[in-house]
Amino acid sequence: MRLILLGPPGAGKGTQAQRLVTKHGIVQLSTGDMLRAAVAAGTPVGLRAKAIMERGELVPDEVVVAIIAERIGQADAKRGFVLDGFPRTVPQAEALDRLLEERGLKLDAVIELKVDEGILLKRIETRVAEMTARGEKVRADDNPEALKKRLDAYRAQTAPLVDYYAGTGQLKTVDGMAPIDAVTVAIDALLKPARSGRARAKPAGRRAGGARTAKAKTARGRAARRGVKKSRAKAAARPAGGRGRKQRAKSAPVSRKKAGRPAAKRGRAGTRSGARKTRAKRLTRAR
Image (cartoon, rainbow, N blue to C red; front, side, top):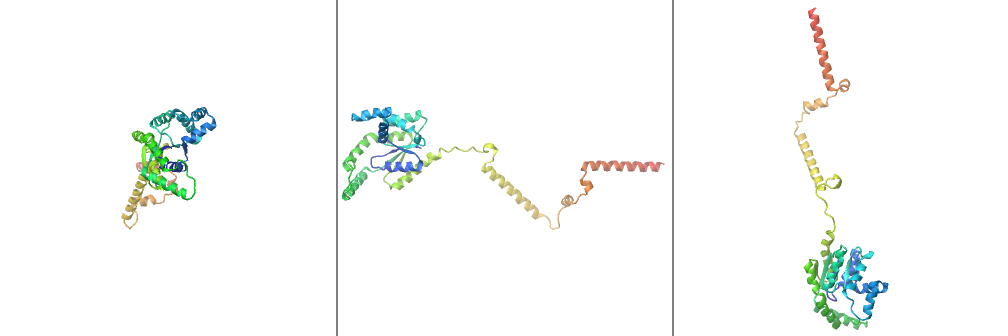
């Protein structure tokens, strides 16, 4: 299963991504984590990204896509992945589509967590106030002003992805303002058609090996039950005086001598014996 989660900062993408990882046995691919891992591993792409970041420049799309290409080729990503933080722009989405197509892969769904930005800002203000009251350290970017800038950047760069994936028919939308568990249930409901579509359809009629389908077996059983009912009805309609002549004749005992000789042979022997007796009588009379 290969997924993308879309939504502004604070929409809960990270929480839902972790739940998808746990439930489906896939991996969460974060662009930042992949960049740091590539740099630490000293791969050719990682060294290139390191030089760019040291100059304080943004890593270009082709480098990010190359790092993602390396990552999804690893063993733990074979079962699937959920992308976190990528793509951020329509050109990145187009580059990802080309990458997946080259490998014979495709996305199962792009899920948008739709939220109210005004409520998100209020949530951040409340959280910062609570952390300050408890004496906890607040991150530099965890404040209403920083979130407002991130939301502006999201609207300018990433929001167009919603229209892009809606055009491909892959976009599915979930109410991100619902409780966390309710959002998880809604995402799972959206993904069920994708999972069931992977199962192969069974052929109609007979299965492999000539075995009858369950439907054929059911029809055969019904016919057998109807035959039993008819036999019982005939038995109930017979007179109380006993069985008919044919049945009595069939059940009558047969002598050992007759039982040991075929019926046709007995008939022919009887005919020849009678003819000899008749000829003997005629000769006696003639004398």
